[in-house]
Length: 262
Image (cartoon, rainbow, N blue to C red; front, side, top):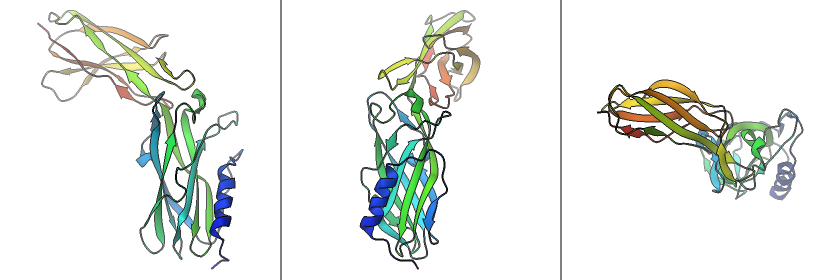
């Protein structure tokens, strides 16, 4: 047992901690036997931002202590993991400090917090795309506390778009068909979508009646994100482009373009 920390005092400490981003990774600050055992951001999925829509997501923090976890005193924040030059960007905090807590047992509690990211406010610029860090804080019923500096990692990515168009339609069997398209992604500085250059994109085909796509070849986007390649039309079916994604941009497949082969 430890001397009990007052709620107001702990909340104040959290507020100060939330506004202080460490220059380098630090050791966890804790008292007693309390532990943060699991932190899940956005249900385990990447956070993908476009240019206008605010993204709402959750951070769920699971903690355990022999005296139980005090409801309303678990608090996560998220910021951009330091860049190679040491710079930090972005800071996102929950809408509601208390969150929604569920007691898994007498010793273990999961508190889920709702956060929002506005692509015109929180990323600040395109360099913040990539890995973000979650710092989590929690308090036990007996006054034990923990501040876990790097409790989890999450990807915040620039939304991608991909188009396709196969022509001519219809086409004679064994004739050449040209497939064009454009790969773009959100720009958090201009708030528009711009071409994603020099990226490999797979041209895929699914024969009419089949259930899966087959990769025909790989094309590379030009300086405007444009794709253009050709193939031989052998059967009725669907063409699409498929992009595998990068560390800053999510994977995406275009809609399918059906071609009738005569």
